[in-house]
Length: 389
Ligand code: GLY
Image (cartoon, rainbow, N blue to C red; front, side):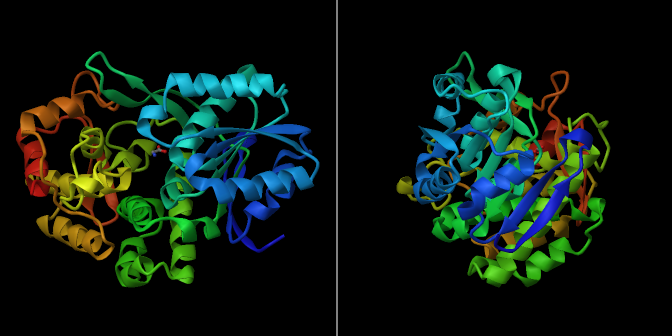
């Protein structure tokens, strides 16, 4: 089998490995069998319509190994990440006659991984799942840690992201770096924003040099240099694995620097603007809407500004994060935002709300952050003002 770096996610009897390397999808069948400890008779592949060549490699590998591989295609969009799509995956598993030992395999980005994982958690009250992430964003974040789910529609017609779901750890994550070579520039830079977020938490998880490493390698990453990309994915997955091992179900108390909730750094801001369909990262109407990572990058800058005004961190930290994000090709301001009161109201519909108050993860120093429950409205507004074009 081709070389790979293996990062364990140590969770007792739910321990699994994230394999990172090149051309791993061609070996999917053997790696799935190794991870499960048996060769499954059949499987359902939940396929991202945006990742067809990668899906084909997985299907070929499974059929060559004599595994009966059924397939359901999903269009990756927040609007399709619904209970209805979840039900379609369950029904596809039932029609294929999947049994308790037969895995559901997701091949694609985070949306497909989340829906497939949720279906795996529910079908026959739980079957194994395997995730083959094909975007940088899903490789370094969504595929690791077992959060699965779908969006719900709220009474006003808007979406509440990931409002229904389950913790269901995969049996294996196969992160094939070759898949990144077919990603378009926007999807790649979006993924880089989550890597910056991880680096902004890294000192709390034993990797104080991650932010500086990103700064030094920003050019190489923007050019997709293979060695830099390999190190980036490995380092980012390592951080995610450590956080999940520490607080798998996101139960750590507010104020903890090690809780899984700290991974939401930038996300409460991001989730408030991501569903606004007219927002464009470039100002060009053809570029609407924002991608998740673009919204996260903006959210990181807003979080720095909010933290600075409350005295939690030095104002210069936000400047250095902005300059890093610019270097990586991400937007640092956005035109067309609603007013601050509406943005705060949107933040209140985020599922991270605690007892009616906005819960924010705010940076305290380079590489460190804390969960804060009682952030004043004026400080949140300072965050929004910082990214308003
Ligand atoms: N993406 C946040 C988490 O996995 O907890």
